Amino acid sequence: MRTVIVAVALLGIAGAAGAEIALQDEGAFVFRRICNIQPGRNAAARALARDMVDLVQRNYPGAEMSVQTGRWITGAQNIERPVDQILFSERHADPEMRRDFSEILMGDDGFRALQRELAGVIDFVSCTETQFRERR
Image (cartoon, rainbow, N blue to C red; front, side, top):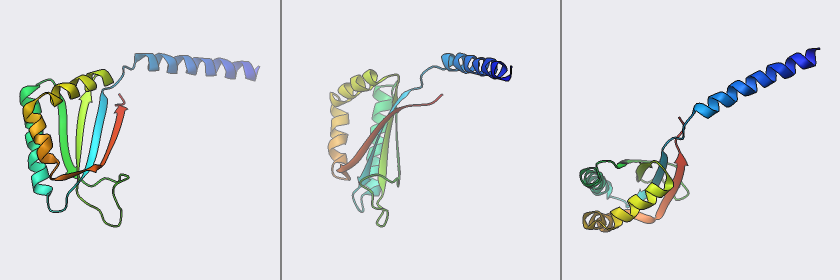
């Protein structure tokens, strides 16, 4: 008799959990790139990052891009000799929208000019990228 009661209780819990999962919608698709800043170039990297975010917000009002500086542990970061880093983050509805947005940006002369300037202040070889869905 106990086994039947436990089984019914477990089925009830599983059914409730399934209903909860069905109600959750997918979160935004997030793309992040962290790059090491060249020694002594932190102020220039911050200024260029602000210019990049301003350009995106001005030219593409629906886009979500942010930039922050700090220190994160990545494959290119030595814990004994930390360097300043820059984190670029974008939020999109899905991976296809991220690809479309990247293509649009690469066609923007102002954005490409900022990318060239960034090449002088960050170490692109050190960049690490992550992509994930936000949890809701």
